[in-house]
Every structure is written in structure tokens, then in C-alpha cells.
Length: 93
Image (cartoon, rainbow, N blue to C red; front, top):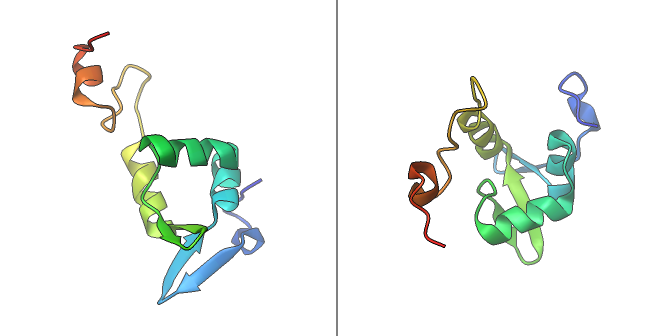
């Protein structure tokens, strides 16, 4: 499991002074599966990522921004990343 107290346990990649996480590492950080992250990428819910060939990497700075944008004070708050129609309750079925 991810631990901020032991960052040396994370497989990180350094490219041009940036730190990147693999999908597996990010999944561990968030206690979800890599398959869930793949589904999020497919449906547009994932944080921004870098894809080089078949390799997917998440910029640690982008992950921290994504996490900051998802902080809530209570369960009633609406996710700002949801489509406007869902946020306003005007979905059409």
C-alpha cells in the first residue's frame, strides 16, 4: 500500500526533472485497481497522463492537482468534473 512516510517504496520515473507514476503505482496510492484507472482513461475521468508507445505515466504534479480538485467538505458537494447536465440534474434518458 502507498505510504507518504515511505516514498522510497514507490516505483517512480524521472524525466526532465519531473516525477511520474505508473498506473500500478497510482492504483496502489488510491487503493483501486489498475483496471479501474484504465476504465477512467477510456471514459475521460482519469487525471492527465503521458502515453509513450504502450507505456502510460502519470505526472506526480498532475496527480496532486487532481487530488486537490477532488477534496470535499461533505458528501453533498458536486464533482466539478461531471458533465454540466449531470451537475444541474438535467439529464436526458
